[in-house]
Length: 81
Image 1 (spheres, rainbow, N blue to C red):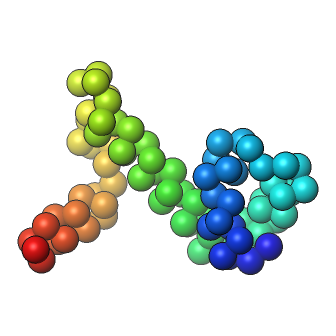
Image 2 (image 1 turned 45 degrees about the vertical axis):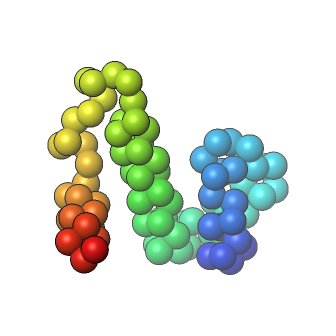
């Protein structure tokens, strides 16, 4: 599995929908590729932050849970516009 393949199967992997053979290949690639491990981590953090941002439960909206790097990137993008 290549990095590109990993990205294509990311959602299915997170949702537990990959067949065993693909999941095994996916996890083997993660074991040797630190960039893909970081990408997977950031993808999960983004999903969690998005879910909290659009949650109807105000206790889910804890600004301390959002990574500082993500906040800075959003602020920089807003200032650029």
